[in-house]
Image (cartoon, rainbow, N blue to C red):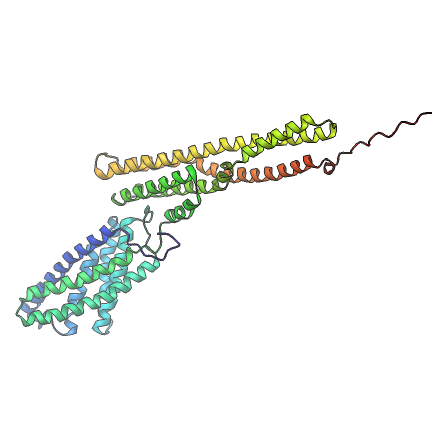
Length: 423
């Protein structure tokens, strides 16, 4: 997502669609459990009114559907899942003991479930996700608000349609199943708050900022690096979350960011090297050499030769910059090749054609990190080279001015000989 646009992007759409499907399954389970619990309490002699009924009798089904949806969407490693399941059972139940209206009870339970679902999505994609929006505080707030409102809407729709279905003699089990499905469907849709790209990937944002300003080979290589980075991100998202995946994600982000920053450092100098500066210097040098050969005055010839020497040094400097540019382009090509190698390796792991273990993935990340370590040094060198090129241009202008105006250089002009006086 570009920083200059105000559009919202839905990241990991397939995960969101999967969450809705799992929410429906969880709702069916919650409705079935609610029906069995109601019958069990009735057999034990408790006076229980089954769903649908007055508002206070909607709360057990609403809590069951919200808790079941939160549990079904729990993701991450083993510890993350256990913690999310425990919180999914406890937090939505807290509003039940606050002695508030049924509407506010459902809303607060939905808000807790929504925040937990955003956290579950973050645990699934990982903190070091590649080429994906990262859920931030605003995503948690939106998830809580969306799920809160949708939970209230869901229980309202379920009770209204449930009363109508009860009037046409629908069996109690199907009524409870229907109520759980509707509430869980609305709650699962509320998890969309975690999929909105409100905080874009910083590497993608940097690339979209830099690439339009580049030209030539630098633009081509930077664009290809961004494409490979995004492809690697899609492959990483399908791997199980583990420290090796996080290490690889950080390595890929650093490699792509440094490659684009290096291209940005050389973008200004690239424009200078692609102009006719070398041709202009050659023309000026040829003119100074011819002028020096034609002039008879020794002082003027000396000034012209000094200017020609300065131009020769400047041309040598431009040649050095051309060589340095070739090295920078070669370094960028090496970085792109590393990203291509990472893409192929991750694609093989995803498709099952390669049996790389977590240790091998971590070793691969360290290998990429060591191979691209020289890029940072080249980036530091770029700024120094660009600065020296600018200073050299100023020196060339001063020397050229001195060559054109001999008097300004401070050299004395010999007096013309006077008439000879005889004795």
